[in-house]
Image (cartoon, rainbow, N blue to C red; front, side):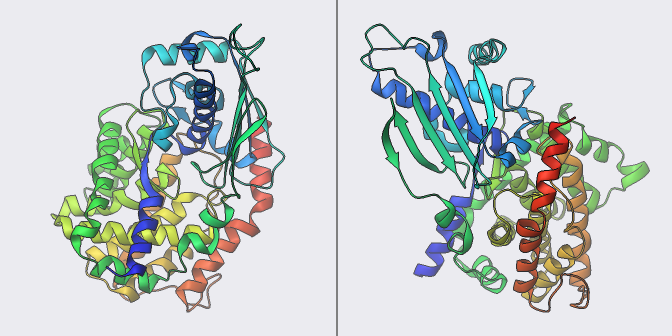
Length: 444
């Protein structure tokens, strides 16, 4: 394996990983859990305090974190929003698990977290920050943790720019760790390594299978979520409705099958299912949307594991590449990016080469670029279903040699310029849209 191939593979490992619950409130839980663990490490005489002691949690978040965390289900609680996520992080969170910080959830922990929320122990406010992704969690105690404590044991943890990227921690106002903002390392060109669609295609289709077989964990995690969504009554039951109406309305074809499976996984996840998703670029819904249509194709048409792994590697890397120009959080719905990746995976599975993959990307950019993100919530499953439908259409057209021409809107003859145009619209052009959406949500 070349050094360049290793760099790309490392990028995939960083950006494609399990996440339990919507990653915005989970980032809050992670920051609070880190603060709680700092107190435990610095006050070894105090045992079991997380489940018994009265404490306060102050959380400051960026507007985009607030937008994406207000209405989404928190795993295992039957509740939505930041307060219960923060309380769970304090009570049972394990910061070493990253985006799976709440994996140790128990009924007792949920009850304790709800008690803290009901008692008004969690305060949430909007931070004065330019970072789109920002969480500052402070955990403190009225009168100190114990009579023997030598200092007032309050701790703070700050996450910036990536959902699990700690940039500062402190205990009793003493800085324990401080680093440069993750903006350079986690966003911008360095995160993408200057990739191109052509290089991504060559990497995904030529690297030895044993080096990329790990990506099949996508199927394990996200298919389990899809099955849960189809068997239970999660969220709006979008996926279930599609599959149950396949004869009368949608048809028993690949498109409806892919729409149903993908939406069902989103239904379960956004309503608070305790199964993890395989995320992409810090988003579980994007991880679901980038992979499930490709997995659905493999299931319906009997694709072998190696071809599926290559298709999933292609779809995930295309999404990561596009997100480089868009940023982690924006007013542009993430399923636009993720479904573009899945369109590329479908093209590959149907025998298309790099030209057809590029055409599929352009077809997607010319179709659903304007879909806005109005926060994470159960209704995301409907947007996911729409994205999958567009992905299948775009792939079919690309394989027929049909591509939206450069005379249309934001499309350029160069697929890389098309991707940059898409990113500029979402990251620059829609800033005022982002603020307006949040204003509307807060004033309802």
